[in-house]
Image 1 (cartoon, one colour):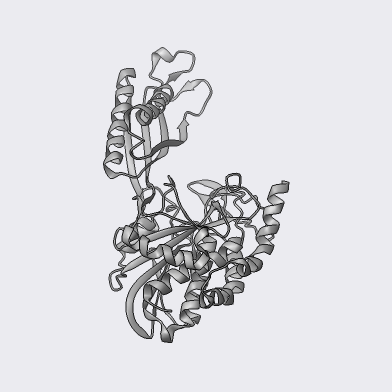
Image 2 (cartoon, rainbow, N blue to C red):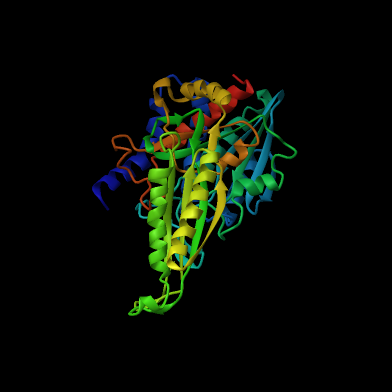
Length: 435
């Protein structure tokens, strides 16, 4: 274990209770409510972390969630979008409706944190044997929302309005390509049909911020995510006689380099950022055989819908023209996994003071645009929404050097759990009008 990783581990295990006492300017009722559930939140998070499940397979996690919500006396619906769980808390006074969302799925990543409750789970993902890890922090999201639900249920009699708790599967994507992500499938199955909230809120733990800080911005915040696949067809031949065939590997490589020129020379990235990345390049089975097909798979990230359409059109034209010039063919398929996450400006203005009350004004920072994506955007496209980040890197560690989300060494300081509960609880209470 590397020394800095050991320091992070020690901080993660020991700092949580102490951090809860260090924050200032926190409403006493909110701080006390968060502290009252802290022990359970930590236990839930560690349990879920040790037993991660991939998208649409969150069976154990969903049962844990449903069991806890039933203990609070809530009416619980399960099996939404395969494994999603929803419950509604009706306050004792009239008021608005809100939805609070947490995602439950883990990633096909083999854990390298050295935590005593590290995942040892393995499974098969798209034909490959993989480890499974909560490398993005969804274990924390579930535990935080369960803590918020517990705190709100404790004041049900005096609580105005209604709160829907949404525990969503498959934010990272379904096990099979071409299927819907969890948020869209929940909406398609009517999660907001009988209970349409006035606003929806979500959070994400974030290695790029130190524990204690919360990040938010108005307007576009997270990018739209498209999954693309490019199939180049050539003509098979012996590796020693390339002139007898059409080499799809060379053509695919030319296309890949050409797409980078699209971003660098044809798109105004000063107006709106864009990223086009290939994550897979598959072709051939033997060193001296030129195959007849090469396939590339990757992602496109954009913030502007018109720019997205323009890049896809340029990508397709570039691929087809390079292929035609070499006697090959190219077919581009694009699947929209998630739209851009855009925080409603008026709602963000209303929420920012709540975050400042929860963690202190100096600890609420303006987030830059992030080219990561989140299907929380699906909910926020139906009703006004705000999504914010909760710092998860231990104090004393440079967040710029900490293992990032999706890393096998991603290590959450458990002080972030208290910050997450306090932040979301304060946002909910303020919006509902409770004191």
